[in-house]
Amino acid sequence: MAQYSIKDVEQLTGVKAHTLRIWEQRYGSVQPHRTQTNIRFYDDEQLRFLINVSLLMKYGMKISRIFEMSHDEMSGQIKNLSGVFLTAEKYSEVMSESLVLSMIELDEPHFEKVLNDVTLKYGFEGCMTRVLLPFLDKVGIMWATNEINVAQEHFISQLIRRKVIVAIDGAAQPVPDPKKFILFLPEGEMHEIGLLFAQYMIKRRGHQAIYLGQSTPLHDLYKVDEIYKSDYILTYFTIQWTNDNYKGYLEELFDLFKKKKIILCGPRGKEIEKVKNKNFNAINRIDDLAEFLNNL
Image (cartoon, rainbow, N blue to C red; front, side):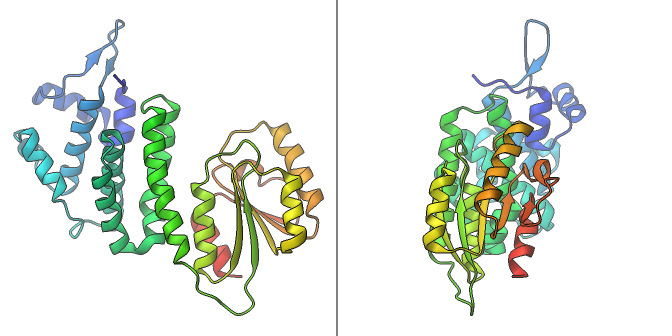
């Protein structure tokens, strides 16, 4: 049984810890477990219930009415939710929480429905930037704190990876004088959804890209570039490296590609943007990558 602290539940549902305690006292339907030292924690079933409560509240349903519902009635209401009457920000929150529920329950049909709804509303790029990437941030937190297991993380990651690959195949919109990109992940880096989405964004804007994928040695990258003659080298950092490792890796990368523009993307961008080199851009926000590509 997974164990979620009250802080974990607050992060995953958007419901404040103070509110959770009030519900516990007033409605008595979500009684947390206690550790031997009397610290509250919640199990999978309780987390699912609280995510459902949060979703229904965001659609304007009164909390007293929600706590009167049976399990089946609540499930029926959740399946019929529509984002028509929500603000864009609230809609994105609701859809992200719905994906958390899909992951916990290993519910692929519900995952597909949520993504189809969001894609119809915002298009695929909007779906990724507004919902999927914030959701993946939540997944990272849950995985790092052992709130989900490896199988659950792999389950949802592979579903998203499959969606991005399908989108890439239909993204090409050729432009005159397209730029050429090589995309790769450093050795030891295995999380490729961000890099795949970068490939989608590049192709959607009419440029060309070779995708080398996970854990690519720099000497192999160099050999590919000798043949392909790229304009840009783009990589994506998610793993935590020491400053010395960053410095050594980047020095080797810059030395190999002195005449290339190098783009370093991902949540570690801020950690490496202080590096002094005129040939690279550090981009840690997906909106910034979109702006960079739009200005090529």
